[in-house]
Image (cartoon, rainbow, N blue to C red; front, side, top):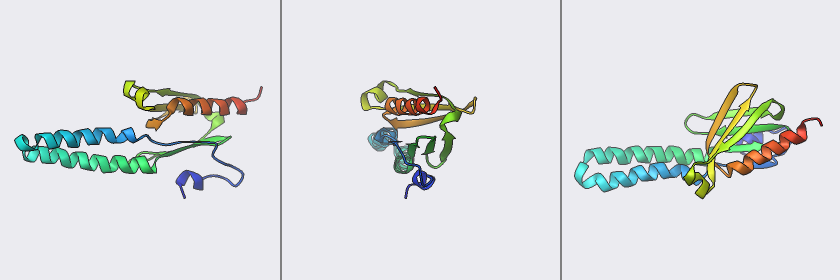
Length: 149
């Protein structure tokens, strides 16, 4: 069972779920390719670069598989990252702002960063989220539905 699913109460369900995007693996792949191309001329230095890219790639792959963001009617549940795991359980009424940022490549491949501001001044930024604009739209809709008219 996923860790955000295990934190749900009996009357709660995930209404929107976001995951990390596969583009998190582009950096490590590029480092490995560059190391491979330099292998003939740089020897041990290129092998060290390939080893670094491999370790970074394994870490990124674990992050890709384990990261999960869930939205319920009353709160936002976040587990993201590896080896440093960001874990948040934020009630929607404590969120003061939510926004997304997509660089040019992110716009083409539909990934980006989400920024959640809660408790007035605390901020959390999660990178490489798939469909960040859709996620922000869903969170804003739930906050609007939760707030009294």
